[in-house]
Image (cartoon, rainbow, N blue to C red; front, side):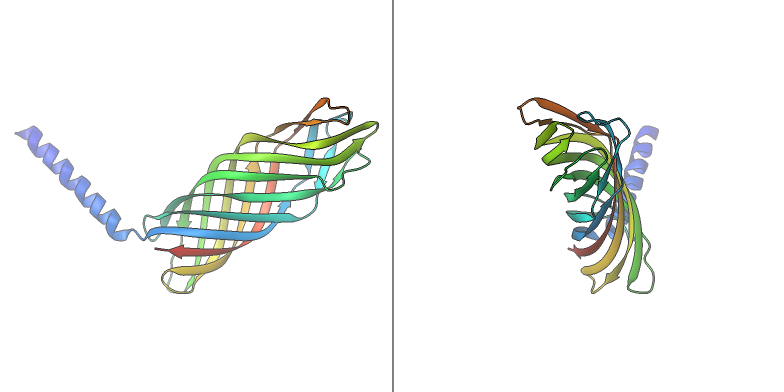
Length: 220
């Protein structure tokens, strides 16, 4: 009898928690982001005859992302996102030509989001996420000394991000805002071909990208 009472009590407590969560839940949402991506200088660990420690510098680039999730309460949401960010290479230290070469990320991340609702229509938020990123390298006639590389490759690495921003609620279902994201992708390892068809290994340190984006969110 005591066991039955305990089990019934647990069931009642679990049911109450489920009901409370459902009562506070705000339902599913989708979002789209577009903006500028700034990638910090990357350290070369292996590429052609270039010394270890040489830097790759980037031009400002582009970020597009989309995703969705579920608002569990007024203060907490979970979700996921993917998209693309890329930057053209401005300079490779020690190389004589980079042309239109670029490096980019296609992240696939799960996020947890903290919201800070208040009496106004402006709502701050912050969060973090983790997953993987498909980091690609597109070489267009990179020349270092007598070596010439042209080709593309990608590598899958662990990635994580932190983010925050401010949203303006247009109505109960739609909002717009400005967000900042820092994406960290672990060190990638690519392979490309030189002008004789020989495979060349290209390794760098981790890749850090900062993005400022316009965000549109719709709740259902």
